Image (tube, rainbow, N blue to C red; front, side, top):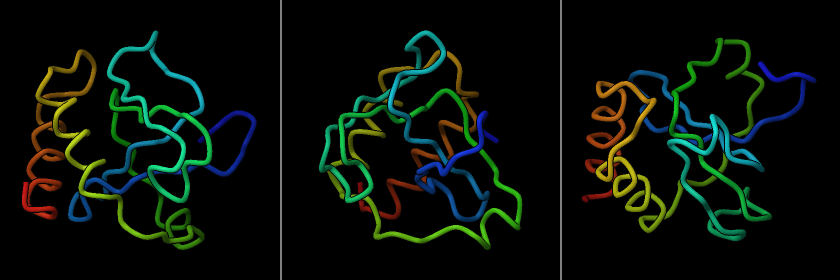
Length: 110
């Protein structure tokens, strides 16, 4: 899904829906609906990056079969994602935002 093709890091924000959000080295969509994440907030985040909350991605089955699984995000990162959603998003459909917020809230007791 990237051009040129490369490995992408993503966070699964809803297993039931198969929703993922991507971690990017730079903000996308003119910086709208992005959450800055600092290096070390998760083992995948090796330098300051951005969580793209402008869209959710549903990967093809073959992509998921080839994917590597890593430990869950921290409660702090889950809270930061929920807080960013509660601040209001411009691009992410409200239905998707509600699903992410509900799922992370239930998973982490927030």
